[in-house]
Amino acid sequence: MHVTREKEWEAITHVCAVLEKNPDLKPGKAVVLMVSPDYSATAAMHIAHHLSDGGEMLDIVTVDVPYPDEDPQPYRSMFIEHTCAKLHSYESVILVEAGVITGGNFNFYANHLIELGFRVVSVALFENWRSKFQSDIVGFYYHHDKEPLEFYFERDNKHWN
Image (cartoon, rainbow, N blue to C red; front, side, top):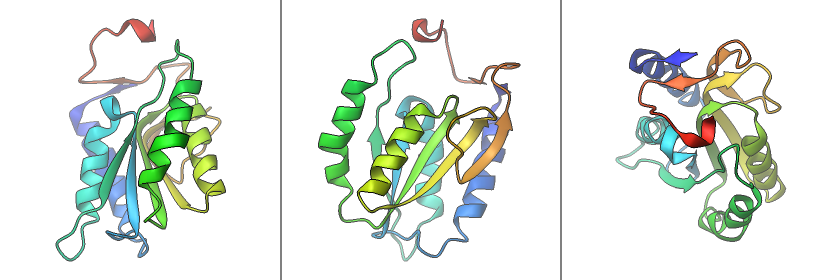
């Protein structure tokens, strides 16, 4: 699936409209966890600003994830040992990813946060129908086997070959 700027914006406005109906997602109580910042920065920024209240926006914390050809363990250890320490003052965590392909990263992060007692709301702008993780809020579904996800801003990346 080739994602244009217009399609990305359509997905962002959809997920923001759904999120704004949740009264618990307020600054100081909820945080945006930007999973895979190289793809999800735009979505996380719009969500954090959209959910602003009383002149305050939601904080954003970044989480790096492995490419398909990398070992996920160092990334998961960093998340457990360092990233989670930044979240303790919040009740809810909004997991945000531009594209959920297999769901492996989201599955690990969401389950770990739930084990720690956080209320997790998962958001994917684009999610593969066959993902092992089913996000709470999805902009659009796609079939990765038929049409791999590709964003308008991407360039050749040796990790995806």
